[in-house]
Image 1 (cartoon, rainbow, N blue to C red):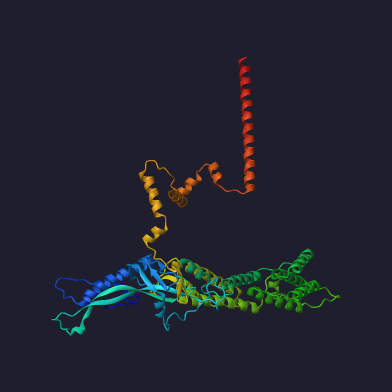
Image 2 (tube, rainbow, N blue to C red):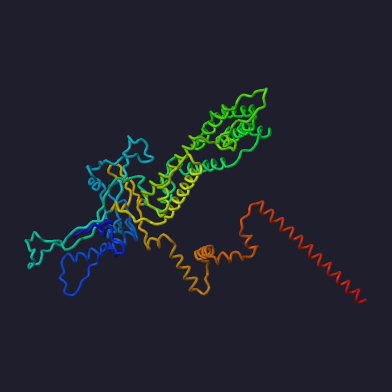
Length: 567
């Protein structure tokens, strides 16, 4: 039988290529068509068989999936021996081939081990490990783990000689097989612990969190760089405050002495800059010296904090050196402030080296996004164009801030795009056509344990019907619909009804109209809330009694007034 392997693998045929705009795309499958008077050849008839087989494999592969459908239990055939037994069952491999085991199969593990590459007898190259609880591995036989698999096979058969009148007539040696027998074979292979996980929504979403990011956390650094650039822009736009009060200076000193961190150092340095701009040279020099001498040895773990610290110390050192020594014979006057001095007075560390570091972080984020989108194109086409055209200029604080905001926004859209794309299931790959059935643990030549829980099951209607309580649900439906007076509760239908009410808008509306007492009874309260509600309920009861008493006295007063009128 000819196999037509195509672009999608496993003999389903087809291929990919470019076509003209508006042209009809050629399908993956070609269905043969017959007409009266057609001269049929073996190619035409094989095309029909190949078409039906490929369509059946396609449905099995993509609509059902690979794995065990039913049966195929693996059991020990004899105690203390090397034989195992496989029960009848049905499985599908990743190409969609049907693997049907019609009767019990008894397998000799020793013979299967002999079929492994470069192996003779019971010895094989798979790594050995001591069985848990067996003690010293040197005194006990080592446990070796294997994986029992079943594979789909095809065997040509029923040789037939060509028709005697055929132009291709030959001798009896030219006979061709007229049938293909679909079968199976069992094999052992090394059991690989920690095998590759199947693609799933959860693994795809987890990959979105780390795709394109370095270990240091590029997104966090981008956000911090954007905040620093925004502070540079806003700090340069406003005028510094005047000279600080003595109380403010003492408070900043106490905070810095208590916790020598970057925010406290920036605040104290800002006060020093304001003192220098106001002309208080002595106080400014003392404050700036305290910051420089004390904060220089403080390590910063965060990379952005380290950049800000270096810029802060550079500003403090520059400003302190430019403050002239006090002269007792003249009045002190403020220094000629620079842009860096005004920024420091506004609590914004700044330096050219800091701007260059921020520019490098923004450029790194841009390059990471471009590289990521080049390998995995997305749906935000304008982001690719904007990022490719983006230039980061460290000499313009506003441009630096805008670039950081653009890259960070594109970063967020790329993350959302990845999460949305993860909801689309990928077509399954087919790299291993064997279907695992069980793990076989062997010591020497003896099978000591069989575990068939390693297998994966194909998700079919019969499988779901077995796993889920469909029969119980069916019985409840029959009882609810066909019995005039059901004699027992219907828990599954009650659960489904509650789920329906919680999901539908009408159910939520009806829930709101429930009496407050019943709604309160369903609510779980902590002891304090329950005590408060109990107190309010007691006060309401007292008020209710007082109203009843007032109504009684009012009735007596009305009766007395009526009696006076009659008299």
